[in-house]
Length: 318
Image 1 (tube, helix red, strand yellow):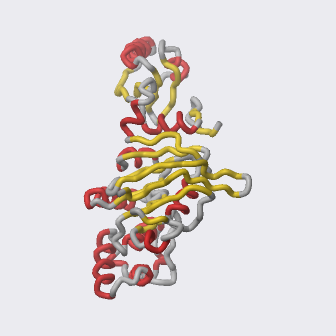
Image 2: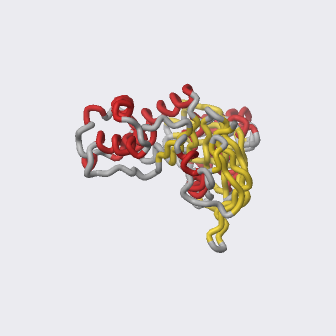
Image 3: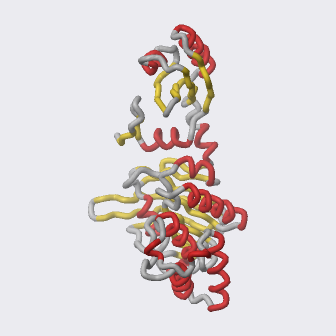
């Protein structure tokens, strides 16, 4: 049995087609990433899978339960962590968590034990009696995640779980996702952080303009565009007009400045490295680091969604 089965789902809002006949499945215990530009259909998909929105066509099942006709049974198996924190700021962390548990009709002894375990896990136990109006964004996000886990779900929907968070909160949430995977909990993750998906997901689906553009493991998706390779170089001192000079090296198709380094896109990294060394010697500068990279998940995302990356690094939609 799959944790999620989506069969030819479509969703129309008047003349707007938000989802166009999409199908995919998520295995039980899998961490599944769902990526796409703004307006691609990610939120609409989650709203359908969590029983908030009814599809125009097609059907979706959660552990075999039809999300439209068996909504309550399907939702009992899931935890939902929305992008925006849904906590009550006039209540304490503990009161918020106990309220969430009561919505799932969890008995007092069980909910209190789970509540303590979750607040300790997310580093909030010492603040359990404080009103959440004084919590930082990261603390609110961690509490929102704890509230979504109080029913010990078999399936967790995480909508941009680390968006805009501090490093500590980010690391805690990533560790929790890895723990889910180890315990066989299914995770459906939407994120704008492509590197996060690359590090945490077993498979990734890329959605664009309401249609699934690709589904596979991050590494297999990268292999579809092996031509996108690069050489990253740092020079000291940095000569004037370095980007223009590096762009003249044979087989370099693009140069991007990334902080104190330059990323040279090429199909022939060895030739570019030789060219960089010759350029450095001609400019009387030193190469202090040089690294080669294969295609990234971000490169796949850019190619499949029609995004373009300008030379100065600003991304725009075609």
